[in-house]
Image (cartoon, rainbow, N blue to C red; front, side, top):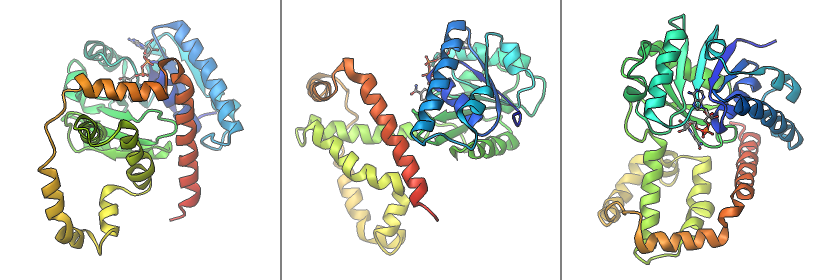
Length: 315
Ligand code: NAI
């Protein structure tokens, strides 16, 4: 059974999610890691996750947990992982030298020019990680959001040499396996998600640093306000709907946006009193020894929200 073979390089948090995402769409997955214990633990964990997902009715795809699990195998041979795969998704630690070396090795093992070689990197630029690869034109970044199984957006960032065909097919495959791909026309530091996220973190930090609000209240601005809105419609649709279109919105509000934006302070240095205040608040609410419980809650809420949005959104 299986539609075609996908090779996953690295069986950590993100590698496991990719394996589950591709298996949910019916692909055969071979997951490689340098560490045999990591691969074996990943297979056990995936099986447990698939059963739990079915129990909570959050399993993706139409195959049973057993059918999905049976599509995933583990290996400690990179050759075995790469052989005959049409798509290779790497998810190894965020270390530029390691990534350079691994993409060089992958490129040497790949035999066909149409195989897609993809990296999960959160912030390393394609010209760095693919610099030693002999197959730059078929290399690309697919950066998922943590947790990738529940937050479907994936940003696709090409190398300057990546062909248009690889860019297009990567986007199509990501959509086919149930992710929500977005494509950057060229690489930019931070890609899209982190550039936008950092602008939110900067202003949230400044509001606490300048004594305007408590950290708890800043979190509430997002969770019960802006975040709820943005989980359903983006900033452009928001302004389009909040007036009779974007043009009218800007006629009315551009001057306010410019006035307020001129008061934004410099990028915080993320240390000192504000750091202490924010850590005190968040560690009182979520002690550092209770992170796993809170991450499980986050994943449950995200998964439930994704399911609800899918059910409610018939358009
Ligand atoms: P992780 O530390 O959970 O897993 C990395 C795995 O790679 C480990 O199992 C390790 O044994 C294995 N590994 C190390 N060297 C290897 C090699 N040479 N060949 C094959 N496997 C090797 O890391 P995680 O969190 O899964 O991150 C992987 C990538 O995904 C990173 O580039 C990270 O920036 C990116 N990413 C991470 C997100 C996150 O929230 N954790 C979100 C989005 C992207």
